[in-house]
Length: 509
Ligand code: ADP
Ligand code: MG
Image (cartoon, rainbow, N blue to C red; front, side, top):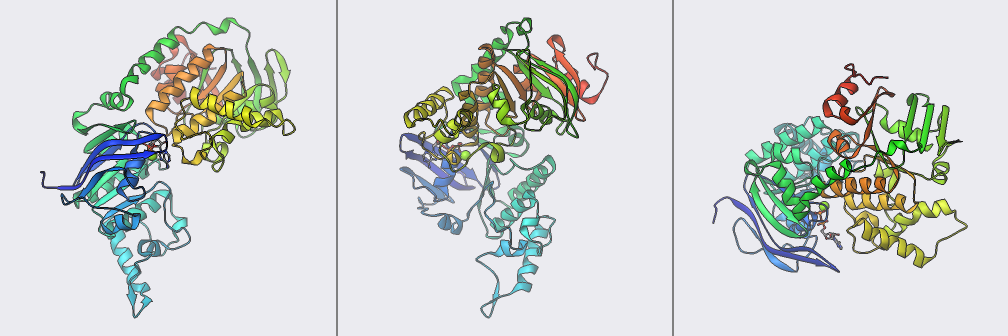
């Protein structure tokens, strides 16, 4: 047996009603390594971690610490006592307490029974300095950035002498600089011998910071690999399994796309604008095509589509649908005209967290029908089941609260919601951001299928590559203005970048 093993999990099996979340999974963590746990949404990553931290009891298997006898970890408190700490994406600290108080909650240094504040601040300062986290111990936690809050959660774990540090999707809400700072901290801890389990779906991050990768698929172990020996494409293939050919399939679907421009446009905007958000633009969208909107963050991509949808009320210009002038000042009007909009921020704009999958699916159609035409229970259930099946939404059932689904599956529910309204014009603003690569591929495929059936789709993504894979035309935005439109042979990464940069593309308008 290897010397430096901190954790061995063997034959872990965990069943939920109707779902085998984990089947006979092995996982090994060594001292001073950063070990990525990867897999598509629903692969079983979080369940494995919850078994390890005593949140769930496993059905079969064993967990050994430091190469010792199998240990029973019955609760998160017990996991903590045994040196296993978890930092979740939603930070479980108290925003209204100071940094120091958060570091020492439930273990405050005391003098004659009273909290020794001086000592607490001193030790906090020392700890933060050692980990090079730049923040004052006296600061209120809620005033710190999410990145700093996460580092404080990590510092707390480290000070409690954790041997195993689990980071479950810690980078989703961080910007590039913050991610880099977090990585520096992770590397420092690794040097101190901490074993780190890093759950993420960002491939670049895995390659930037991890030594080893364990891949799960459908609750089963695919394998453990050294990062240096596993090329990216292979990692993707392992996560996706036999569906890997889908990527090639997408490309061929796009190539067989008919020339939709021979038809009359579905939507025509002329000089449409919204003060301070998007400058006057002309735009035509045809049935059966996917049009991409690209540009730097903040260039006005979202604002343009919001203006089409009436989510931002236009200040001037005209809009025609199927050749007829229409006035769309509100999303409800847009919906009545056969438009649908999947917003960028699904957490605040899209999801009704406490409602079930069924309720989340039928809500847009119900709104469209109006409250005086309530849908029957059976009808709602049938619709929900249809879209759960069609979009392969991984959920225990239609009555499961949406918040218990993974991000990618929540996104599919929202897409299902809008498909149910049977739109002719579908706006998808970053539908694939922050979701795993398998679901991403499915969503791209779905877009192409829908467009083949005649739907017109407006697609925004920060990943130019995925737009090139799906779009037949790209609108380029810069400083809140439409500055270019590329099609055919001009649809290349280079041309797009040039247009974004204002580097004198022939297509400048
Ligand atoms: P990941 O974290 O890799 O996205 P999870 O571990 O969350 O995957 O989920 C694995 C599988 O177990 C999924 O099919 C998921 O729907 C199911 N699952 C997870 N937690 C529960 C639960 N509390 N009840 C029922 N099913 C669950
Ligand atoms: Mg998870």
